[in-house]
Length: 115
Ligand code: AMP
Ligand code: ZN
Image 1 (cartoon, rainbow, N blue to C red):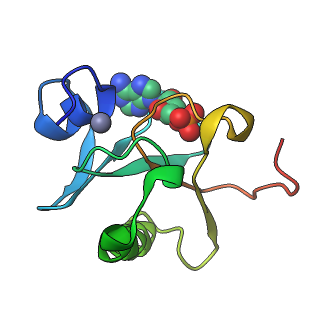
Image 2 (image 1 turned 180 degrees about the vertical axis):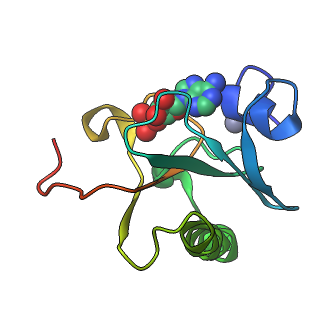
């Protein structure tokens, strides 16, 4: 837990969020400013600043996040039509919160290339 980190505080329950999944390793909650009809953020409870900072010991955790993403996609009815799972890294990647998170976006057709 990094005390001044927004997403550590959401994972700890000290800052409220609309939580849609939690287990011992991962928390998922609705994005406060949704960019699609379904927009969920999936985070590890462990504070990792960005995907640049993952290590080999995080492999299972990162895999678990992907399993949770697919479970949520099914639950929210976007798995069959399709969805996007996005990680933004650092400034050029569009990252604004420096606790690693994966955006699960769906419910509309996504464009490519992204902006
Ligand atoms: P990124 O720009 O990839 O770092 O994504 C950060 C995301 O966090 C943005 O989509 C924000 O809308 C979202 N966000 C910021 N504050 C909150 C919050 N308190 N609760 C839920 N989502 C948030
Ligand atoms: Zn954190």
